[in-house]
Image 1: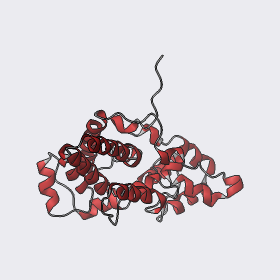
Image 2: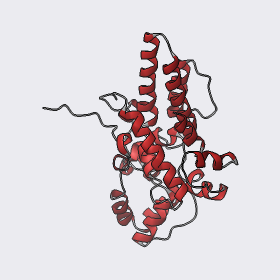
Image 3: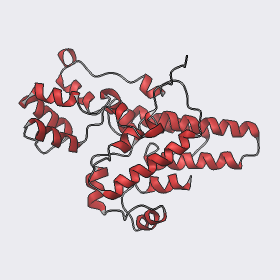
Image 4: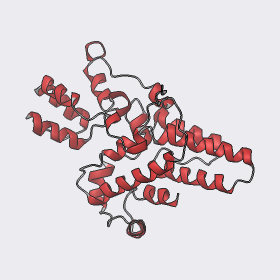
Amino acid sequence: MELLRALGSLIEPPSHEHSRVAAAIGLPLPPGPSVHGTVVAFQRYPYASVYLGPEGMMGGEARDRVAGFRRALGVDAETDEDHLASLLALLAALDGWQREELAEARRVLLAQARVTLVWEHVASWLGPYLASFDGCGDAFYEAWADLLGEAMDEVTGEMELPRYLPAVLREAPGLADPRHEGGGAFLAGLLAPVRAGAIILRDDLVRLGDEVGLACRAGERRYVLRSFFAQDPAGTLRWLAGHPPVAGRGRGGLNNTQPPRDQG
């Protein structure tokens, strides 16, 4: 479980300690702040709320769910409870508490808490998030995503996961109908993974522009998408329709957030 703590720390802004941690777990030399900014900080935000919240932004109800889970465990609150590093550290801590607990009833409760943390707050978004690093252009972050995916597959492989969707996925609203709710609401939904069913990165929009033949202007993703729809609405929609969905970009057990089917 210390591997999870180490991997969580390596998605944070680079520090001198990162090189030592990466070497200890067999990863390449971490890049500097500029690469972290390009690959992670400005595109692949390591916060559960970005991928599970209906707004597609940090904070909100998705972060409140994590905070409530921590309170139920009696764990002190943190500023960024839904940050990947915080979630992985909590998962590692729960494993340690379970191993050290002498009372059987308490061990069972801690085991159930681990499953809840993984199913509701980690597996519900981490698989597609890690898959978004495929082809990101940096060997360190690609290797980091692969190793974390393998580590989480081991964790989930030892668990009996629920036979129902995580609550946040069951309750997620769909995309707004632009004919009735306006283009702005539709564009906002496209950039909220839990609503759109896809993670659309800035790099994806650059590729969209190149493949469809559109001018990709500088600015926020919503501004760029609005510009694309103004230039070629049909071509933009066709490209987006073929964009890999969240359900198809998971890794191993982390992609299995659909309830299993009964056999027979």
